[in-house]
Image (tube, rainbow, N blue to C red):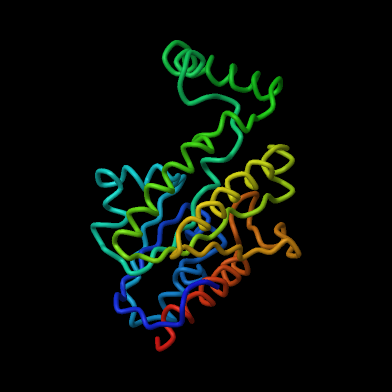
Length: 239
């Protein structure tokens, strides 16, 4: 843990997450790690900004240049849990001739038939991810530089490793996850106030901790909470 054991003067905590950290059927809001954090640290102003399908583009666009995920609130700490959506291998590029053909030329029925045919004849490709590794790095670096200027500490939760069900659908997904997680580690080495944590360790059974192929269950949320809480004990020792 790199953060010094010093009481934070700024009690605002901004949480930026995708759907992994959100409640869903089988996981109530009161069972999420975010609720558990709010319950334990009642004296902190914990601001939750989730969005399904979040990518790093939110960091540099939301509110105009990304201000709604930093400067609008001026938090002392940011907790970031994003990345799975953008690194997932895809069947199609979300732009270009094929995308135009499917969405502008084909009727809905023909589009469905075309997609079903592609699913049978292609594998999902890492190079067709929503956000390329280079853009991911650029977006993060821009955000971290802004955090540096505002004196904001950042806790990054690494992208969850792939379940067996996810691997069966996207055989190359774990290599993509490792690549994007390595970018987190790389940038953490460039900035002194960034800590990268991986709540689900390699020794843990990720299938047992997930409610489906992507999202953590109640036990998974408790593990996430414990990992974040270990950081908070250093940042907010008197809370």
